[in-house]
Image (cartoon, rainbow, N blue to C red; front, side):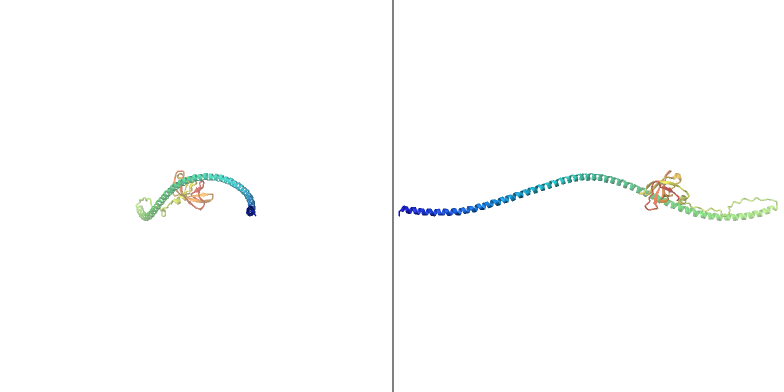
Length: 297
């Protein structure tokens, strides 16, 4: 066998071995590529499935978002309407608050005026009470003086009665003397004149009578009407005065229908009117203008 043949055989053997390696490599590589292709195909299908799911979820989310947007728009419209309504109510509340502030200011001014009037009425009432107390003290002093005067008058009248008894006794003795003198003169033809007796008869002494304002009020019947009433200071004005005979410390009855509402004690008088302190007789009933007043029931 020649060398060339040997070389060719060796080359053929090497080439066959090389070709076998290439075939084995190709077969191995083709299986890997197929598996890779199958994996890639399955990945693509899974990706398409996920894409479809994602697309469906996206649509659902879009629909949900649109629904939420519609709801939010509806709520926004409602909230806008509520805000408008609340703004109107706030404006109304502000106007009412301003009105209330003005009313409170007016009421505060009224309270201050009423307080000042009340203080003035209280001062007038205290002055009137002081005057009443002074009048009562003066009346008490006058009554005391009157009692003392009556006591002195009784003592003087008792003394006068004793003196009258003594005068009567002396007169009787004088009459006896004159009678004997007349008898003596008649014996000689003379007539004696008898002097007039100036002694008062027995039992003609005058007893003192104590007159009080109450007795004087009861003796006089006066009628009129209530013209004004101020229950805060418990003062009332009547339609008759000094010209009709009204005097301080007179007591009048305030009558409505057939019921006595209150009593009034006169403090001060004018020619055509008088003012006094009101003393309620029945709780819950107060005098008012137009009620009748009278000293006697």
